[in-house]
Image (cartoon, rainbow, N blue to C red; front, side, top):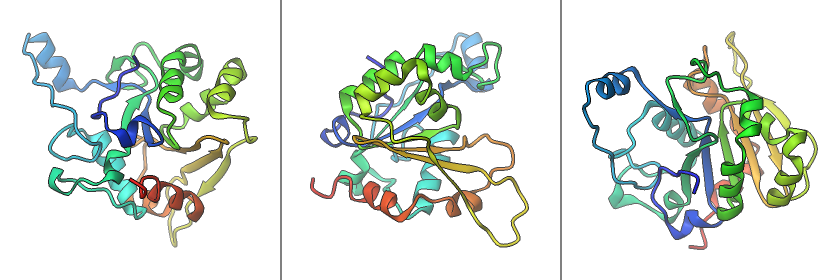
Amino acid sequence: MHPVVTKDFPENLAGGVMICGINFGYSSKDESLEKAGILQEIDAPSFFSDLSVNNTRFRNTVCKWLISWGLPLSHAPERETAFDRSFFQTNWINSQTRSVQSNNKITINTMVKESGGILSLIESRKPLVIIFIGAQMIQALNDIDIRQRVVSVLGERPGNGEIYQASLENYKGTRFKLITQNFPKTLVLSLPHPQSIGITDEYMAALKPAPQHLEKIININQKV
């Protein structure tokens, strides 16, 4: 099974929101502890936005962005809702490196070749929304070499993705992109990676999806 780092709930096992990074991070601290033979305690899985576990910069930054869009994510187990349980976190590639620019650089071609696990996970859980954190993944998803498989999982491809950029007064930094593709079965959103040079929380708060897409996320488990 393709690895998922959040706890399984009925709300995320079918029709939830998939948060997908490129691969599993590996900090300099992780490396030092491993070389010293020190075993690190692994947190018990919980819901995606639970601040008491999975306390990584990646997860915390993504949560901050989503909350800045108005998504009602809780941080404490006693305030956990069906909406919180709808999210699950994974990565496209089941590998662990310091960054995507490490010795074995992760390219779009690499992702296409190693797409079997993530596509099987999507087919199994049938998320209504996929949020890619990193621009390469939506390019890999649209690669002609796996298009037939993607169509079998998500439905007919709706054409090229729609590109959005935030408009901020007096903003002079990099204008990162939000790309959306609304497949018949799943809405796909592509965001920049938190480690992108020049990215700011202010810009990401303004780079929010279209109202109908935000509404789809917010209402994803109101029925539960």
